[in-house]
Length: 321
Image (cartoon, rainbow, N blue to C red):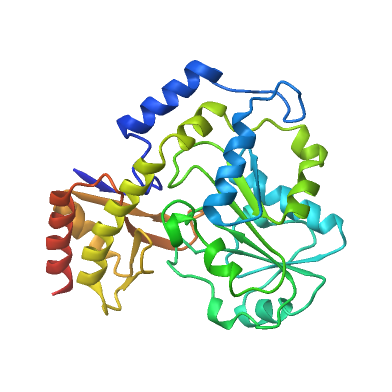
């Protein structure tokens, strides 16, 4: 059985080199640090990893927190407390939701709000179910809102150096920019990160919700700092797989794809069973509840072998013939 599902896009979760780096981190820091980041005894690996993540993305500053949802909620609560109106894009992940926020069902109204200085416009960097990017080309040239992007499914595997949306958006967005993300997808480690200006990150660092919460386990940050070449090699391998599969399916309206994103949406539900007959299991279920839409998706990982990708390609050619 071949499994094309999950979210560990770089295949780090089972990679022996990454696991060995985590083990070395545990030998140095233990399994977890459950104290406050305000403590004078906080391990220095947090500041080191934050500086490295900011430099990787090209952002002024980074802040590490316990999860991607914690990152989104910390940003939303702070900006709401400053009197801003929060504007949620269509299909925004619950990590960005906040009481009183206006939920938009059309991109046009959300984009209109982005023109206003006192607005905070929150969206996902990609919709991993519908396999769709936001309409970035329609961003207003004179927009002055604060733009907050949840990059959970992009950070580590998409964009310049795998750094997600920040490098692409910083050059085209004139207003304040913030990126939040889970580290548990492509990067395969528990935790979340916030990218933003020095001033905004410093303000978040002073919040009791930050000081009173446990940070990510330091062993994983140690591993992240010591496996840069591995991540780049895995990303290169992942995109080798994607170039083949996405080239094979280019122009077929029965699939949804975003160049360089390792998930392929299947719009023909019967294909799920057809692939299963060939021993291929894909991600296919109703989400988030039993009466919600059915999503069928092929998830490609860097640790799929060339032979597995070739066999998947053969099966897809037969389906699309």
